[in-house]
Image (cartoon, rainbow, N blue to C red; front, side, top):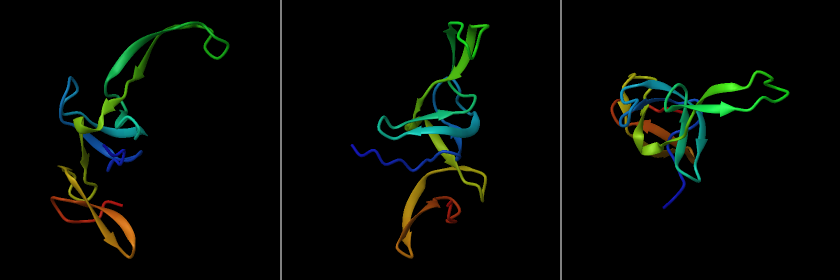
Length: 106
């Protein structure tokens, strides 16, 4: 299995499966070695935080958990629809292309 992913940090994605199905948000972090993404306001879990110097209050914090890359679809910035992505080589550079409208994403 390759660790190449066609979704990057900063991309707008739509969740297509799981408890947050239908949510549209931005990728905060990509973890290609595990094929996972951390998406803003998706897969939020509660975590008990011990008081520290940075956070003297402590308490229960909400953090976003990683989700698998197969659970999301990239939203094309041109046609604003969730779409699959193909790779084209133009001018010796790989470019992501929307399968619905055919426009370059990068």
